[in-house]
Length: 409
Image 1: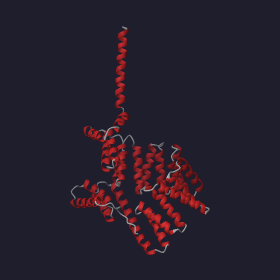
Image 2: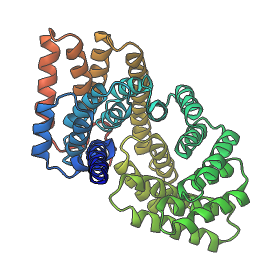
Image 3: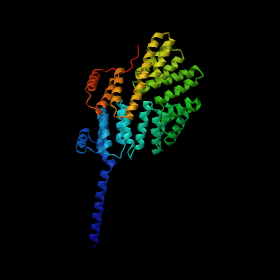
Image 4: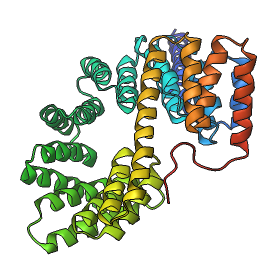
């Protein structure tokens, strides 16, 4: 009898162990961990065998992105979103890649899909708010971010994104409060102190701003953005030539740390402003031209360069640049308006074609192709649009130049 009871107990333990092993093996975290170790060929094979598997498609999308295959990455992230209808992460990542491809309309659509999901809707509203902010649609950005904040009130990243949009809207008191909430939730992030410093600085509370910037530097001593913010405050509060020299050193260090990076625009521009204020016009011109190389067509750097040229007596050159800047400003405003309208009415062929025409006339063939691809997706029977798109793609394949704004020498 005892032997039979022991045998039964051992059998039950064995069955329980097998069940536990199966459960562990099939747990989502472990499945995804195994997928992350698979090679790309294996993932492609799995995607064919299980075309609706969200974990497989999501991991495959990450591999495509790592290889720089943006369109493939976007496609697989979107398929991952479809493969798990209640989960937002595939749509969120598809939105991020679409924006990286310079297609904000598609980025908005993907993010909106994510907001309709049960799991991860807060992250999707955060993504939507970020896309709207970069388009300059501040109020829409705030609406999306406030919904993200309602869904995820303890998410410091949401509060930080709110602070960034408040700063763009020049709602500095709101930016301060949002930054302080982000810091309370995650006190070790230097970036959150930078947002706080920026809000305080623009309210002319320079002592408090300096304290926040110094905290950011203590947390991350070589963070270029923190060096730039500290230099900006020091420039505003300077009481001696020594203070200005120290600010210049901070800007130059930030530029050096960011050499070749698009983020080097801010310290380069601020360095130019400092040099301009010191009447070092040739040196200021050099920095503003570098800023425009980093961010072609930037209005702030362009107008600052105009000012430097005028002060050096090069008025005709300044006037030529001013006209170019006005055209650039008009182009960007019209592109934003068309993009927003197209996001609201995604089936409007005429809007997609108008956006493509606008980009082509401005010389931005890459953005023109994206707009025409959208148009042809809505209505493939447009031979003229297709021919223009293919011609633009051929030009892009044979060109390495930066499209759009061209700065006069």
